[in-house]
Length: 329
Image (cartoon, rainbow, N blue to C red; front, side, top):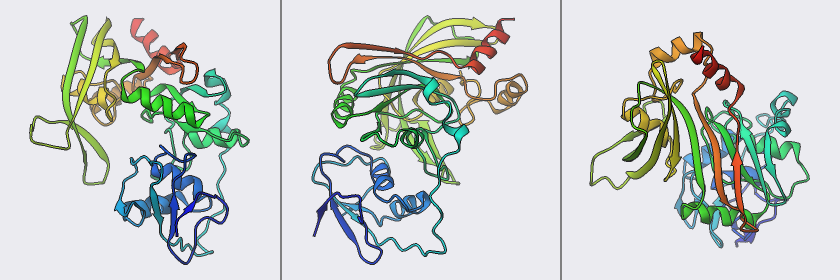
């Protein structure tokens, strides 16, 4: 018999458990939901049962991108992890969380915005114990609700939104679906960009390479049902030697969208270890650029609760500022 969600003694070690999704868990991604309700289970095991199809929603397999809906029926298999294999619950080290409070750029009762540094994933998983959302929950244990509104890549810095109320999260997801949140990025690319403004529309498709790592590439197969339209508007800000400083406004929000579009056009982002110029990246590392030059610097939207205009700005990180100064000298 299905039960509504109660995080105490939730999952059986001996039999299958069925949970019915209520309003408190609606719109959560399935992996985040499982990480929350299976508190003492290693993350690697949670992602394993998801990959193996042991977790079902409405009798169907789902992947980690699935967002739960009200009244969804979630099947969780018996969690059989021997005592000898159960690890002590990990907690973040102080140096992993000390930066958080100094990187807050906006906060009220419904919303938290931080200027995320490069090198931090937004959530744990795939061998990573703690992402930004886990770190925030750790330093704010009294918070009743903290959920990611969106994602940015681990190597990208800049604005990351966290909802502090379920209603705020739902409203912001609705705004995102209707393209009512304006996101702008700044990046430095290889090559001499000449157009002051350029609109780019490309069809993108996700694939997995031989090691199981996700990649995105441009496709021109009109019959491919897995492809998605990506659209960005690029603005030239400055040509600096052999590089160009650009800004981009996202019209769609596909995985690795800006990185793939620019690489396809022949202007890879400096420091991009997936789609960039690897030989150039090694040279840049020796000159101080040890990360990808991609930063989410601006976001504009209506406040999810009051409807008032909210404009957020995230200053360029010190290492990118330093590289810019070096390029100008």
